[in-house]
Length: 386
Image (cartoon, rainbow, N blue to C red):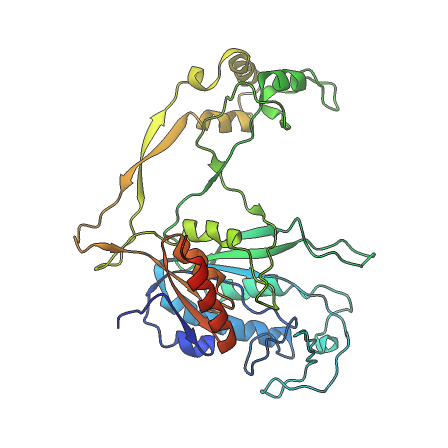
């Protein structure tokens, strides 16, 4: 069965996934409807279940099918937020179409009866953690919990707890060996002058601080002693939310999913065997003097003499080796290559499709609400002309 890409399929995610061929998808990234948060105005929607246990079971049943359609070397990324347990303003005046009772308002917000959840009032429901545990119980391998920090989060009127300014992104795989392209972020820069200033400081015990144990601030640029290559990207991502005026619901910002797509979905896949191309590297070893000059070199040598087991010294030593990209692997089929496929089983307004196409990947979306499909297709026509 030939997989048709670059289209959005209308229908229930579980049922539509059953129509897709086994191991045909390179990557999945999505943000499913959160539990007890919003009514999207269509019968059969996920998120209005009377208990979070039922919600998690149904969601993980969907990801059982995701696991089937995902290639052995595929990756799966899931953005999910939490909610607090409280009785709220529950009214028995609405029905989801499956006999569930919830509160429907003109603004699309809903409130299931959280008093029946068996949790103390005002307690976090821990939906993301429960979901991740159930996914691993079903055989998924959890590689990372990524924190999406929102510097422009919605203000909160609460005064008896801290304002929540983050959500989680779970990075799952189905096999120990999977396609992944390392993503780098810049090293912090520092000047010799700033380093020497820190060296003259003492710690709480009155001892001089080691050069390699100093955390530098935003000083004026001086001698750059760390190579240009960068360091492995960390798992806390600070990304501002960005409203989309055509949608009454929250959409994740394009920047949030650029890194997962670059890291988890290959740009080139063999049309015949389906094997993804990988970058090939050549190691370039730098002599210490090429990295550390002048006072920086002396600082390094002193730290090495004072504490040979120093963790940061060993990190800096490892930076002597630079991996330079020299080409791409070739499976030898001579059948040509095509973009990898990104699947979003809850594509909503189409952000995943827009970002996937802008990065040169193919996409498949699934959406229950036909109005959102029209919205997504409109966005694709406007934005994938970059």
